[in-house]
Length: 327
Image (cartoon, rainbow, N blue to C red; front, top):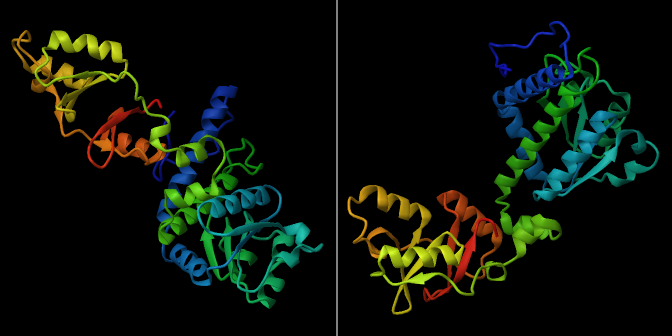
């Protein structure tokens, strides 16, 4: 199914005739709506970023209903990317949770209609504390938009719901705008992988960010050959090594590596393969990584270079092992 763009708008049309078609139709509407947000990253968006950076304090995010769920997620994303944040439910705020908000905070209020009474009820209290308000709303003419310090446009043409009723596209667009704000702040703060690791010590992600390469590298029985090793002698070494490469060593110094790709390219350009040796087809001065760099850093290097393995070496270029993308 074709994804719509600004000139290829999805209209309400007749209801889809099958669950599969209904699902595809909903995804197309959502994708088209999110795609429009790029054109809304404007001066008003810059004002929102600069406001949070200027106050450099906790960001309070609030909403109710589905917008409340979006607010909770945006608050979590802000916090994980270096902007201290806290979710306050708009209804609970009037029953004691207002005490969580303090002068110096910045508030992000989320409401698709911009007229949710519980959300609007926060505004007098926020103003009394001199807390600036960033609104994420689908109606720029709404009360919330008019009373906010900065308003981010999260309007949509229609919901993905077949009856244009249930909050579907509107919640995705609001969340995407919040994510864009969190990422912009992350970039502005220079928040890096090491900072991210500090806030994510657990789980697989935390492991990748913290684990040094030396803990996962292959270091036993590495496949090694000399620069002058004939192809027929090198192939069994590569096969037995099961790393998809051979380290080409001379006087305990790494001269290059031969990968499956090097082997294929060497065979393609050579008319006579019987005389080929490792030095003829190896990659010279291959990329290496230090043993104390993290699995995350190894992953980034391999993806950027479009390779599947790295030689692990110390500062003196002594080979310590091999790390693969699968590791």
